[in-house]
Length: 452
Image 1 (spheres, rainbow, N blue to C red):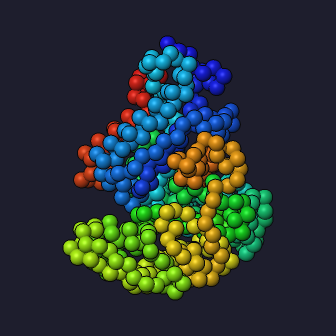
Image 2 (cartoon, rainbow, N blue to C red; image 1 turned 90 degrees about the vertical axis):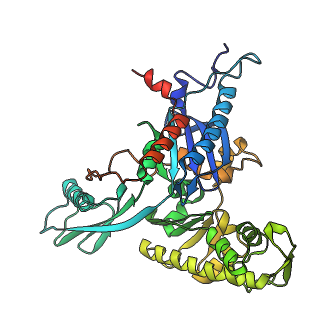
Image 3 (cartoon, rainbow, N blue to C red; image 1 turned 90 degrees about the horizontal axis):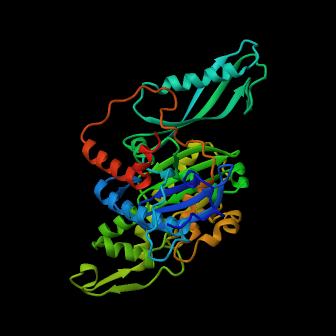
C-alpha cells in the first residue's frame, strides 16, 4: 500500500481535514480543506458539486431524494481526497477512503431575527460584568418558555444615561442601563437538521448568510451600513450590517420562483416555459429601452398546442409588479434592522441576475446597489483551486464556512438552558431516515468505534 503524502500531512492527518457543505435549493456543494494551526485554511484539497434534490425553502423536504444526491456528493469529494492523499500508490491499487471527521454545514430555512431590550436601574452604581451578565440572563429567561430553537443571542449595544456604548463595564450611571440584543432563532426542523447533518461535536453549523458575508462584504460596507440581499430560487436571505455588526437577519420563503409562477399563471404557460421566458427576455422594469416587441413560441415547445405570441413589455409588467412587492418586503426588513437611509444594497444569488434588476432596486429604494463579488484576498489565495466549471463565486458560502468566525454557529445545545420542547409528531420516520443517511455521508461511523 502506498504512503500518505508526507510533505502535506502529519498524522493524524484526518483531524486536519474540514469539509464545508452548502445545501442550497439548486446545488449541493462541498469544499474539503486542510486546516492550519490557527484553524484557518492552509490549502484547498478538493471541490465537488451535484444538482440538489429534496430541498424546499431552505430545508430538507424529501429525505429520500436528498439522501441520493448527498451520496453522490460524498463519493465525489471522497474520491478526490483519496486521489490526493494516496497519490503515490501504484496504478490500479485501490485507494482507501479518507475519514471525514470535521464538517461545517450551511443553513437557510426558516430563520427568525428579532430584537429584545432589557433594562436595569443603576441608582448611581458602577456597571460591572455581573450586571451586564444579569441583563443577558433576563433575555434568556424571556426565551425559556418558547418553542423556537435559539441559535445565538448577540449584544448590539448598551445605553447608559442616554449615551450609547458597546463597552459599558466600568462606567458609572445615575439612572438606567439598557441592553439591546439580536436573537437568531428558528422554527420547525432547522435545528434538528443541524444535529443530523453534522453528527459530531467537532463540527459546526452556520447560517448561510453569515458565511456568504464573510467572503463578499468589506469591513467598510459592514461599518457604514449595507444590506446583503441573497436571492436564490426559493428563498431570499436579508442580512443587515451596521457598525460592523449583524443588526438583522431574515430568510424570506420565496425567491426567483415568484416571478416564474406569476408568468405561468398570467400567460397560461408551463413552469418550464415560464422559467425560459424569464431568463431569456424577462425585465425587472417595463420602461427598459430593450423592453419592446414580440416573441413567438412555436407549437410543440414546452407542451404548447398552438403557437403563442408573447408581448415582451407585458412580460416585463408581470415581473415588475412582483419585483416591487418583493422590494417592499425587503425595505420592511431593513427598517427592522435600524440602518440609516444611506445604506448600500449588495446583490447576490442567481435571481438577482434578472435583466435590469439592479436598476429597479436603485430606483425603488433610492440607494446605491451593486452585485457582490468575492473579495480579492480570497481570489488571490484560493482562486487557483477553482475553474470555469467550479467557479469560486459559486463556492462563496463554502469558503465562508471554512474561513469565518460566525456569531451564530451552533454548539448543539440551546443557547440559554431553554426548556426542551416536545418533538413534533408526524415527521419522525422520514426525518430519522434522512438523518442516518446524511450522518453516513459526512462522518464515517467506523471511525467512532475506533475512538474508544
